[in-house]
Length: 106
Image (cartoon, rainbow, N blue to C red; front, top):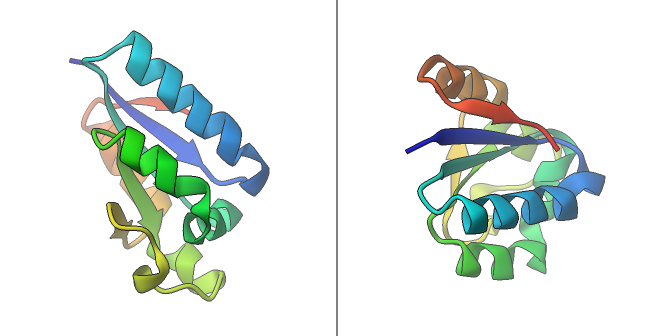
């Protein structure tokens, strides 16, 4: 199985990142995907844009940066079910790459 971390930090790239992940999971069913959302893109997690994505792809692990949530004045309670909060998105990405995860930034 291949492990992949997808880094999403730009609000404008949310649809692109979601589509990239959809296609990757469809074409590579054994792919393990962690989608780390930080920076301004974290604000999108509090919108309906993620409901269908999370429902359709429960095997994709979506993680939100706590620092980015704070900067966007959001709380973990405002995120949809299934989104995990990590202390720092960039630290999480480094940790995953150290574990052998490939990196993709749409």
